[in-house]
Image (cartoon, rainbow, N blue to C red; front, side):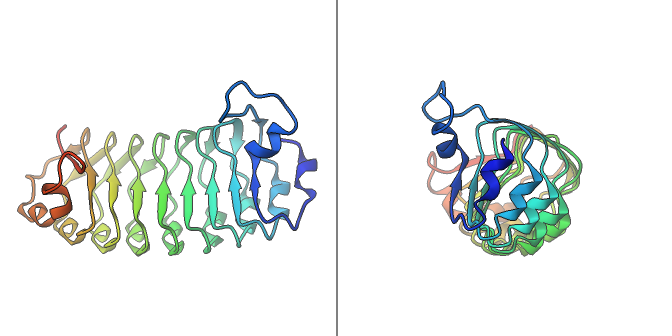
Length: 229
């Protein structure tokens, strides 16, 4: 991605696939072939509110300078070849409402400071190689509507603090190595429509309290409830 594209420091909206379609031919109508690293100069776009670099061939690490974009409301870096850890500098982006990093090669643990991003409504980290436990601080994301942590290498127990996410409609944690009990606090997720915990190492009986989740149990097949291993 050429650093020269990043001199527009008053840019309000940057959808990389739109810019690239003006510069190179694409093979697919909705995908581009941007490659190389995300340059650290991207942190100079201080007024940026929307950054969409999804569905490209970007590689390397997410630059920590991206955390300087404190006005950013939507950040989509999914479906690339990014690797390394999620930089903790991203925890400074408290205006973020949408953060999607899915379908990359990210590893290491989920930063607990992501719990500071209390405006988030959509968080998708699925289909990576993230390890360690799900941080308790995720329970601070009280505006979260959709949470996707599936298809990683996450282990340990499901944090009971997820019960604080009362706006949550989608909760996917399947294809991990989670163990222990399904927390009783899940019963607080009264807005939940889709829940998938399959393909883990959970040893819990199905809590009777899940019967309180009426949006799941009374609206199949629209709603989805998967617990099997």
